[in-house]
Length: 627
Image (cartoon, rainbow, N blue to C red; front, side, top):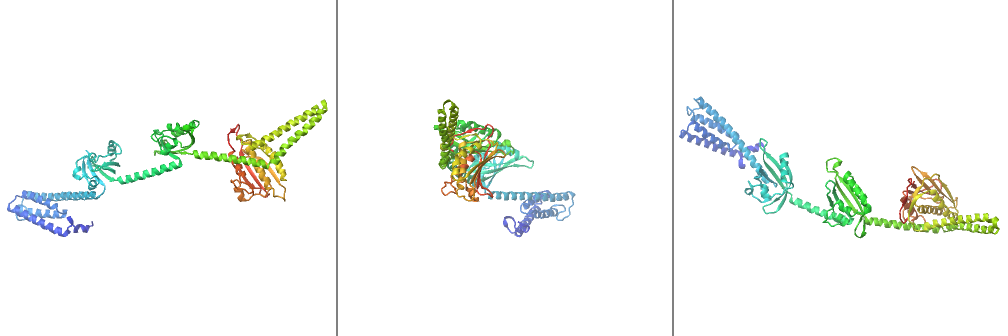
C-alpha cells in the first residue's frame, strides 16, 4: 500500500477523512463530557490526571500516534485551565502543578507510543495469522513439552482436527506420528543445528494415513533460549503414491527385460556382506526367491574347475575394491552346465577416496546359448575346412599319384636290380644289400607321403606344436609339384634362413599353403603372354615372427576384390564357393596371425601373405577341435 493510500483508507476499509472526522468528533465529545463531569463533581487535580490518562489510552487505541498526541496536548491544556490553581486560567501558581502537568504530558506520550506499538504488533500478528491460514501447508507451533500452541487452517483441512481440539495436546498423540529415524536422533539434531527436515507418516482424524514433507525450526526467545518448535508440513501422499506406482511399473518392465535377455542384476556391500539379487539372478542360479542371497550361496553352484578363479575375483573385489569381469560355469542338478558372464563395478560412498569403494553393482548373464552357438559354429567351420581339404586333395590327385608312384617305381627298379645281383652269388651280395636299403628308404618315403595325405583327408584332433615353416613349405611343394607342371607353370622357393619356430598345427598350415598355391596356379591359367611363375617366399619379421608370401604372375586383383577376398562366399571364380580363403583366414587368426592380399605393384599378378608369431621358448599346446 502506498503513502497516499494510508491517508485515504482507515480501519475496516473506511475512507480516511471520514474516519478522522468521526474520530475527532467522538474524541472531542468524550473529552468535553469527561471534563464537564469532572468540573461538576469538583474532581481533584490528581484524580483528573488519572481519568485523562485512561481517556488517552482509549483514544490511542483508535488511531495513529499524531492524533493521540494532539488529544494529549488538548487534555494537558484542560488540566491547566480547569483543575490547577488558579482555575479557569492557563496560569499555574504552584511549581508542583507545573511538574505534574509535565509528568502528565510525558506519560501520555509514552502511553500513546506503547499502545500504538502494541496495536501495530497485534495487527501484524493478525495479518501473519491470516496469511498462515491462507497457505495450503500445515503450520503448527509446539512448546518444549510438545504441546500444540498454534494450529493453522491448513492443518485443520489436512488432518481434520479443529484448532480447539488440538491446542495444548501433544502432536505425537494427536497425529500418531511415525518418524523415519528414532525421535531422540531428531531431537539431537534440533539441539545441534536448530532445524530438521524429513518425511513423516501422520494419521488424519478419520484414521487414514498421510505422508508429509516436514520441516522443523527451533523458536528462541530474546536471550537465545529455545522456547518451542515451528513445524510446517506439505502433503506429498499422492506424489509418493505416483512415484511408487512408477517404481513398480519400472521394476516390472526391468524384470521382464532381464528375463528376456537372460541378464540378472545384483548388489554387494563388501563391508557388511549384504547381497541383493534380482528375480532373474535367482532364476539363473536356480534358487528359490525365498533364499537369502550371498556370495557363498552363489559359489555352491560354480563348477569345481572354475571355483578357484571365481573366488579370486571376488576376493580381489572385497580386498582391493577392484571391478571384475569374469566368465565361469555353473554345475546344476543332473550335471547340467550353464555358462555365466559376470561383471561388477565398484561405487564410491562419497568420501572422495578409494577406501570408500565398498559398494558393488553388477550383472550376471546366462551366455549358455551363445557359447553353444559358438561351439556349433566352430564345428561347422571345422566341417567346411575338412571338405575344403578333401576338395584340394581331389584337385591334387594327379600330383599325389605322381608323388606315390615315384618311390614305388624306385622300389620296383631297386628290386629288379637286387635280383640280378643275387644271381651272381657272393660277388653281388654287397650290391644287392645296397638295393634293398634303397627299397626300404623308398618305402618309407611312400609311407610318409601317404600319411600326409591321410592327415589332410581325415578329421584329426588339432595339434599345435613347435615347427619350422620351411619344412611345411617343402612338404607342400612336393604335393603340388605335379599340379603346377600340369598347368605349365614353374614353382620357385625362396626360403629365408634361421626362421624362428612357430606354434601351429602342421596339417592346417599345409591346408592354407595348398589353397594359396592352387589359387595362384588357377589365376595364371589364362596367361599366355608371359611365363607362369609361382613363388613361395619366407622371411623373419620384427619384432618376432615369420612372414610367408605366395606370389603369382596371373591376372591380378582389383582394389575392391582385395578388400572382399576373405569374406565368406565371395569368389572371383565362375565355379567357386567362396569358402577357401575364408577358411584360410580363420585358421591363421586362430593361430594368432594375420592374412592379406595385394597386387605385385608394377609387375603382373597378386601376392597372398600371412604372418605368424614366433613360438615362445618351450611353448606347447594341445586342444581337441574340428578345424
